[in-house]
Image (cartoon, rainbow, N blue to C red):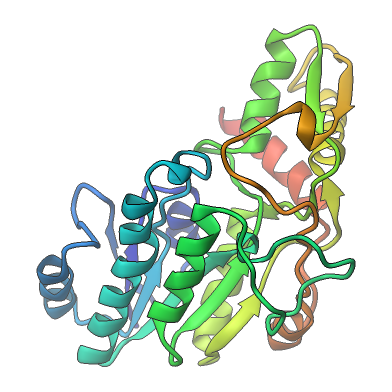
Length: 285
């Protein structure tokens, strides 16, 4: 099976390459080798590669910056997805597209099902929702949240840095979601694509947490393996105490029931995967 991975230099793109099935022939493209907003370039690449599978790990993810650059965010998160969908249809490939919990407004008191009403609060969320529509009915669309990996920019690596440098850390405690380890998400995408799944699904690690809960766990687990050499106070704050350009959902836990049924079991709890990730950092830097 030949697979084209776009956005290959991101956390998920690298994880997709690392977790690919043994029979997969991977062609990886990053922003320097393929501009996915360039229709002619995308079609030429698809014609050259002739993939059976196109995995879209590319996205405009600067949530606050998108408030001032919605046109640019839309180009990457929506228009480009439509181009990839056209390429998939033209060359008889299947498209796997990754979306976000930010398509919801956070007003629910229960985890969001894939069929739940969407109502994004931010430019980022609006452009990602538009991307879902652009992907089309034949695509596999998987919404996820709070993705992190041993490399790249993410909350875990930021917390490790600030905990080592500052006398205390202040973290928002009234936004609830679920962390997601990128290699676990990547493995799930490969498995679902291999089953021929299409439509909208949700995938995160199991469990739920606030950003504050997540930060507490990061410090505890990092101290336990010697990745941090001292503890600092972690103080819970409200969203109102940390104003941002983009509004974020206060509750964005996703219902993964249908996904876990497809995969034959639930994902590991987020804290278990956090432990694995921190050991990776300790071992490899």
